[in-house]
Length: 236
Image (tube, rainbow, N blue to C red; front, side):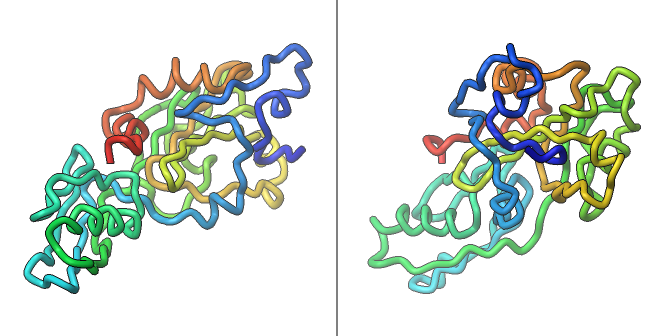
């Protein structure tokens, strides 16, 4: 088991503690393995403030530029209000085609993201200055912790929690051994952070990841983050 990015189910993650309870899979924060390849190749997900160009090839008069509203939606003539947040541009294009199919014969359109809102991550827990931070470029989890003032004396550096929304609506989490990465930076293997990633540094070992997330992180996130993670397929 890798000491850098622990991505097995929670029982395996905490194998050093034989009495640790097994992970309980939840719809919001599944406990399945989190593949680094999937993370590296994950496409960009839309968020409030992003500017889009909707190009309707079969009805050019409907083409327009739109900005995703704070509630995550866009308003398109004949399609109405459509949830765009946490979707890829291609997923949004598919939904718009379906919405316009009752008004147009075989609607053909593309969605292109032309401008992106600020790229923010949330760093909380045992750091000196928890909060939301703009990503100044390609940074890793430890660099985000440094932006938040560094670790406190009580930080549990071998169980730093990383949460990310994946394409398709899934939200997954992984434990990162920051201590091992600091000891051997060349083999740390930390992936670059993405917008709306959550880094949480606990005070003690996380025994039940899903319960911990629901109780201490998801419900305490700032509005932009909690809204992004709360969007479900039923509201798109």
